Image (cartoon, rainbow over all chains, first blue to last red; front, side, top):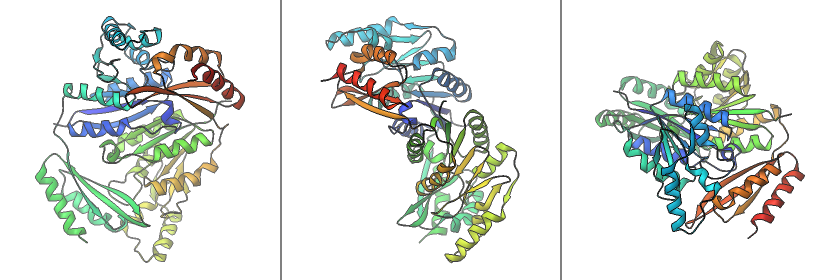
Length: 240
Length: 240
């Protein structure tokens, strides 16, 4: 049986403008791979309502699980929750369970639950809250879409809350062989080895270092013995 | 007149598996912003023919310019050129101009132009070559899609080749104010300032440092005086 599939939607002008470099995608990719969930697509869109709605609908229909990152804070440019609700045709308003979490937290910390902070209790009807042990304001799950914050520490905590609830697959095993020869020299024999080992996938990732080209050959598969067999053949062929 | 729009398509299993962290997106985002071209969407898909074809068609139709990264090397898993040709319904084969570039390069460097390397001369009919001063094997432009290598040094050189050919816009100006207060405290007045300055966009990007929350407030706009005016109002309001 193939592994469950996933997609990620990153919402953020600041990444598309080059101001900041996304960190959440790389983190999520690693966590999903460890859980045997196959991250097949990532989209990054700007803070525009229609762009978010369209991307959420497309990804939700195409993959088993979708994780979003960004745009659920208290400021005027945080529009993700409303866009997700719209994508599912769900009503959205301040919800009592989320409001109670925030009220308790701000009472404890001596801050005011003002109108802006109350925006973070806007949760679509039918959604389940995602726990946020870092800053309390919850994410939420609606259908197969898990809506999380963009601040990396909060995003990572929310991923930790949600991952145990997802159906995982067989963890993908991988081994890497670093070859100090250009891809053009190894591509022919590499294709033959790939054809001889149909139960693994073999990828070649070129790099350049000190002016010389090389490649990392990565063998991925579900069955350790088959990954081992392919990497052994590769090592024999490309041993330096 | 609104600025020209762009999208990027990153092709690479290795990024979706968390093995490597993409560097090209952040680089391209910065270069396009400097040129006044509005990067509105990025997609990352795996090395599957259908996924690439579908994404290229969608992005090519929706944006003025599309840049792809990855999958144009000599190995069996480099399938981007064929997928791009398929997306446009263009025939593809080894093309003489690209073959000649490679033949000369490998003759000079004393290497063989073998069958694998010759794959890098597969160029769709109607495409224009993109110069690659780093490792010679060219990228290509077909319609509004610029197909570039994934190795960062080569990608950057190809971006430098293509950027002067694109119609740029007014460079987007931006200024940032760092505020050491949680977004919940500043969101109300921030929304009022955003409403009072309709010719700029104001984004709030929260961070967490040493356990305290803060936010970078970024004002973006085409007209320097209007960006200045908004940032002055913000500085007055949130001065510490």
